[in-house]
Image 1 (tube, rainbow, N blue to C red):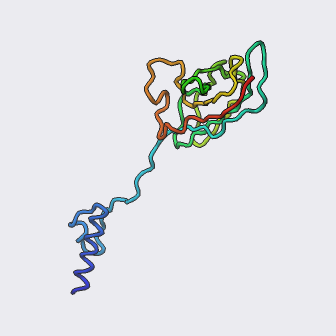
Image 2 (image 1 turned 90 degrees about the horizontal axis):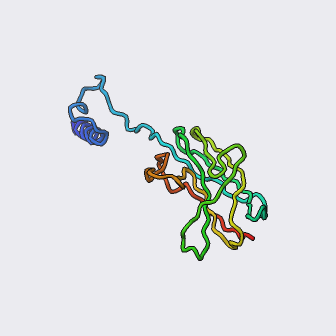
Image 3 (image 1 turned 60 degrees about the horizontal axis):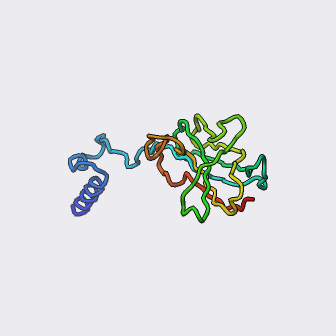
Length: 179
């Protein structure tokens, strides 16, 4: 008798922790019952992040401007495909007080300022390899790559085009000295 009472108490405590009513917990053995699954459904989300940001060669002066070859790799670490988004490059010098200035990032076959992709499937990456163009005489600069950038756009929501699980992995920075 005592074992049965303890067994019923254990069943009720377990049932309450799983969200089952005490009536369902007291059903006799062999009676079919519906127990909600403790496993929650997967969260569906988009999340682009920059996984690689690097220079692929030395800077060169071309037509009075400084050109620097750059590669930016963006990965959709979410489990939903993205919509259209763009990548921007910006620079800042110590004298600029943390203010960034956008620069052209020319990738063959894409917009000469901002490479854009229409879609990136879940788990996939895309590589943007091109040339960043700076004004001459900057010296040391911090260069920032931004995935899902709103640079130059007006009236965009704070998350820009893609509402993501993590908006903080959209940027990467490198420091370079330019002629």
